[in-house]
Amino acid sequence: MLFHVVPRDEWTAEPGGPYAPASLAAEGFVHCSPDESAALAIADAHYRDVPGPLLVLVLDEERLGGEVRWEGSGDQVFPHVYGAIERAAVSAVLEVRRDGDGRARELAPWS
Image (tube, rainbow, N blue to C red; front, side, top):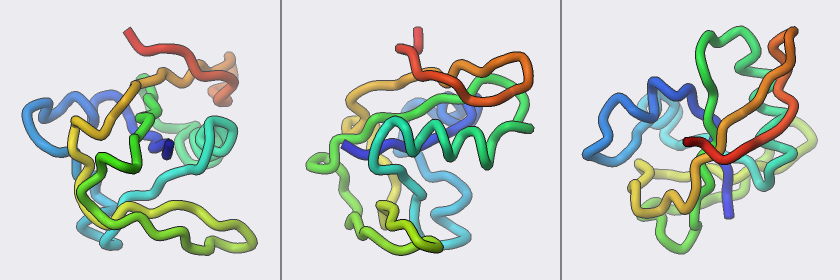
């Protein structure tokens, strides 16, 4: 499984088609995380000031249409998906729960 952090409004904007975040057009891939704890760290580091709810998409790597490459970022390696995310590849959607300071603290099922 791979994990992708996304603002709720971006995920729900076009529910009928594949999900293609801005990074796909700008960088050629979709940023992902290898596990829940890394997804929480990404949410905390890069999305703390983003207003509104944050979600984490749990992706079934076998159902992704695009190639997955594990590539370095600093001293860590992260999965990058080279293609849009087909909605059938999303096995679960989790909500990032934040504390009063906006820090990402835990993941819970999104309803």
